Image 1: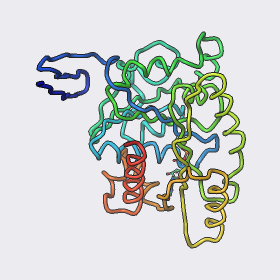
Image 2: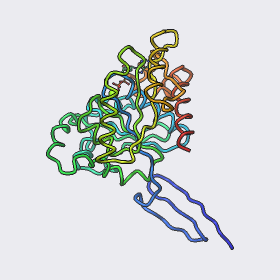
Image 3: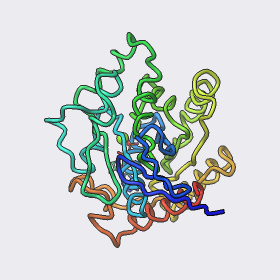
Image 4: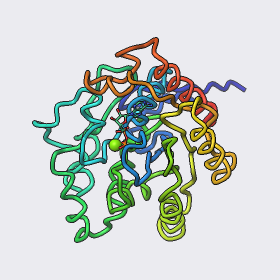
Length: 285
Ligand SMILES: Nc1ncnc2c1ncn2[C@@H]1O[C@H](COP(=O)(O)OP(=O)(O)O)[C@@H](O)[C@H]1O
Ligand SMILES: [Mg+2]
């Protein structure tokens, strides 16, 4: 029997050739991309740095990635060189249901990477969402129409457990938790895990932990070793073996509006995020 199956895939169409017949599908019929929320209600733990650099690293490894900036501070958007002032549609319009995901997508010059930037009005969404029906599924519904066009969709969350983070967790398959190697590293984690449990029980039963990432690692410090030990005890088998070192180049790159690979390709930070992308992709094969 003659049987041939292959598919060609670009941004908005897919051609499936089966039994010699071609079938063209739209976005919604495409295979589903995995949605990952990068969350921890503590600020300054490396969420945005991880969102930008992991997305870019995975994009460079021939995957199609959509990075969604859900933090009103907009550091992810500026970290990939987007000027937020004159944007028509952003993650704000998306989350309040005023625009489709396709209308808000910005293509970047970085390999494999598209972005939904955050508008300056996203801060108000926490309040506006209260009166919106289906307030916890707006992002999920919006991303459903484009997820087929991507291998991965990464959502950078704000440093809180408010409605924006909850909305992102309801839209996600998994949560990736960056933890800074510092004295109060585990503070608030029980609250975060409690939120994950509630969301899993009531809204999104499929939500799982993607992985836990140790950031700003300094192996010379005893404190760092203690934190690593504690975090591994708290999240058995979930902690990435790749750790992100504390390095000034990672904090300089956002000022140039680009991920670390396009700023200093040979830096320790670039090597670490590339290794993380390998570990991430291996787990998602
Ligand atoms: N591995 C690192 N080494 C040095 N500085 C880092 C590192 N990761 C993040 N930073 C810096 O720390 C600050 C907080 O990081 P950020 O990613 O914005 O955290 P969050 O999004 O969790 O608030 C930023 O100024 C960032 O540039
Ligand atoms: Mg941030």
